[in-house]
Structure formats: structure tokens, C-alpha cells
Length: 224
Length: 225
Image (tube, one colour):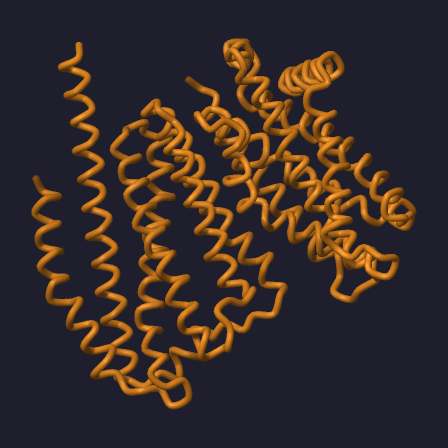
């Protein structure tokens, strides 16, 4: 199976990249002048956020493809990527909170970006609640695809609506412009590592979903 | 014309059902009243505070009574698969959706009118009635948004084994922009605050248009077997 080989390759790749990424973050990247060591959490936070965004986009696209093609393989892809995205979004909220405590002096603040991620998190938790509540395989796929699409297009609206409150989130453009070259390279490497991790986790869960699917089919065959 | 005809027929069916069974609307009104009483215990609603608390209290009541009502009307369709007779009729999925949106909208508006009256009486705040003309655009756009999303989602959730209990979990995060817009625009108008209610009205209008288009496209996947 092709997926199996890709998963193995990605696994060994991550075995090298992950420790290297952490080494770069903690040992090579210079300490930020104002925030100090706490700033290092940025490398993880931003990378996780990008991974979550990639995963939810994949859920959105797979959901559309499912409704269009009616092939359950797209539902497996949608749910696998939503799982990955939900995991990453949870970690984004946690790492953000850990960073905010010493820097903003609060664990949480009602900033548009934080709020958008939190609401997104709720939407995808709902996605899995709904999936858990429907026994019929095809209905489950169809209904969760609707959530996968609606939830995703809600992001810009939530973002826009919450923006009316003053944002205190650091602006990425300013951050990128002021980043020293070593920091920039570490950030780039960290981003790449986490995107590889996203694809790896996605494929891993995707393969599991496919195997489960086949098992169910076999069970049905033996029952008949 | 035929399209709107089927939608109106579904609206009429729901009104008739409500007049005979009195299942959704009466429950919504009771919940509204009850929530208003609870808020009175939970918050300090003295004469000087009530103006600043009004928009928050009212929209929370609208939201929860709305969830209850929309869950009920969808449950009625799911009971003994009643909705299938509409699916198998010549009426299109889109006109079914619009019919349900209209009936939910109607029930929500009635609930809101009563809630505003209850509020004016219980909290001694007649201003909310006299300012109704200015509040109307925000109220209507917000309620339409509730109905557009609620109709779609209540149909989704009633198919699960959790039934309508699941509705708030999916519905609330998605309607956050509407709740934000509704609360803020009402607060700005009631307390003559700076900031412009117009921007919030715009956000709600954009939300409504977006969800009208998307729900219209997606609704057929929810009712098709």
C-alpha cells in the first residue's frame, strides 16, 4: 500500500526533524530581548496554528468532495483531518495561554484571534459530537460534511465580527519584519516540521479510518 | 412562483400545527419568562443598571428560547419521519428549507415580541418598547440569522441519537457573529453609545446572505435519504 510507505517515510523523517527542531528552538535561536525565553514558545505556537489551519482546510475541501462524489473515502479524509486540526487547535490555545501569562499578565483575553480559534475549536468538537450520535455510516458522512463546510466559512465572519474589539495580538507582519535571520530560519524549520507532522498524523488517522471501514464491510459479509 | 407556493404551504402547515398542538411557541414563551426571572436573581437589575444590561439579557433569552423552539419544530418533522412526505412530494428541498425558515422566523419573532413586553413589565423598562422602531433592523436581521442557521442545524441534530440536545453545541458557536452583532447594536442604540450600530447591522446582513446561500445549497443533503 502506498499510504503505508508514505507514513513510514514521514515517521523516520519526523524522528530526525522533531528533536532537531526542539534543539534549534531551545539552543540555537537567540533569546528575545524583551520577552526572554518565553518567546521560544512562538516557534511551536505559530507552527501548530499553521498545521491546524492546513488540517481544517483539508476537512473543508474533503467535505465538499464527499457531497459531490458520494465516496466515503472523502469522509474518512475529512474526519481524519478534523481530528488532526482539533488536536492542533487545542495545543494552539494551550501554548498561547502559557505564553500570555508572563507577557500579557493574563491566561486568557478576549482578543479576536483567540476568540476565533476558540469558537473554531467548539465547532469541531460539535462536529465529532454529531458524528458520535449518528449510527448510519452514510448519513454520518453527509451530515458532518455539512458541518465541515459551514464551520469553515464561519471563520472569516467570526474574525470580522470579533475584530471590532481592539486587538492586542502581536501582528505577524511586524514580527516577521523585525525577526533576526537566525530566528527566521528556526521559525521556518519549525513550520516545516509541524506541517510534516500534520500530514503524518492525517495519513495515520486516515489509514485507520479506511481499515475500520474495511473491517465493518467484512463483518457485514460474514454476518450475511 | 410554484417554488414560493410550496414554501408558503409548509409555513401554513406549521402555523396550523402550532394552533392545534401549541407545542413550540408556548414552551418558548414560558422559557423566556422563566429566564427573565432567573436573570433578575443573577444580576443586579436596579433602575440604574437595567439599561446597560438590557441588550445582553434579551439576546441570551432570544438565543435559548430560539434553540428550544427550533429544536421542537424539527423534532416534530422527525417524529415518525413526517418530513419524508414532504421529501417525496413535488416540493423541492429548497422550498422546504425556505418554508421552515419562514415558520421558525415567525415563531421567533412572536417569542421576541412577548419577551420584550415581559422585559418592559418585569424590569420596569418601557424605553425598550418606545425605541422599538430603531431597534427593529438589528432585531430582524439577527432573528433571520438565527432562523437560517437554526433550521439547518436543528434538522442535522435531530437525526442523531442525542436528538435536539445536540443543537446548542453546533448552533451556538456558528451564530456567535449574530449574537455579537445583536447585543452590540442594541446596546449602542439603547445607551446612545458611540461606535455606530450600522457596522453591526452590516455584519449581520452579510452573515444572513452568506448563510442563506450556503444553507440553500446544503439543505438537500440533509433531507435526502
